[in-house]
Length: 285
Ligand SMILES: NC(=O)c1ccc[n+]([C@@H]2O[C@H](COP(=O)([O-])OP(=O)(O)OC[C@H]3O[C@@H](n4cnc5c(N)ncnc54)[C@H](O)[C@@H]3O)[C@@H](O)[C@H]2O)c1
Image (cartoon, rainbow, N blue to C red):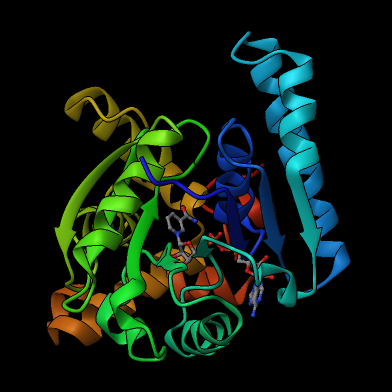
């Protein structure tokens, strides 16, 4: 396998710190560059990665030495120039097409002609993202699931111009970190969020219309449908803002009213009830 060894991750939030974590654990990867806007955000990411590695030590998944080696491979930086030697860059910034376009235009300029440019977007078109670069053949969707250190799936989204060799290498990277890649084509929400997000949105409507309490809605879906986590708890885990951004992309992409975000979700954003990351969403943390 022709895997190179420097991986960069742009954005150290919920997903970015998890992606940096799993690549740092891989013996074939020698450096992980984790980029965010400022030191205070990066310090938060350091704490989360340490805490998650400690949890893995307690569960005997890794030992202390492996955790230290992995952690020491991560360069936490607010200077995006540090990604210039990367073989694979994974973008995990906010779910906003304009912000992603600006980030991709920048990483395109900073990286070599054979660097893979991947996006962890949950819903935004890979073709649209690829258009903001001069190497659309290198652009691919690498959609990790939350929480990244635990979830096995990485949804691989092929753009119309994505080169087959880039798809092959990306599958190799995913296998290397012991996750399972599943391929699909580019469409709003791809497969996972086209199916998951309308369910979460409908659960929010069910709560807003006072059909049942938060606990009852989640219990019905867990006990009745065998879901490991109820849809409202899952919305809190994903982030209410992220859920609304994905619904907006589905709505814009399909031009269908059925994808309109539930008003209660927008209200929650206005009140900073973003879910686990802000301490309150449908539940308190
Ligand atoms: N949260 C989820 O469950 C989930 C699951 C799968 C995919 N995603 C996708 O992953 C991406 C990130 O989501 P998240 O939940 O981690 O968001 P988040 O808000 O937790 O983190 C985003 C991070 O990006 C940083 N950032 C913003 N602009 C930047 C820039 N120009 N350069 C460097 N860093 C920048 C922010 O400071 C923040 O730390 C989104 O596209 C989202 O749709 C999220």
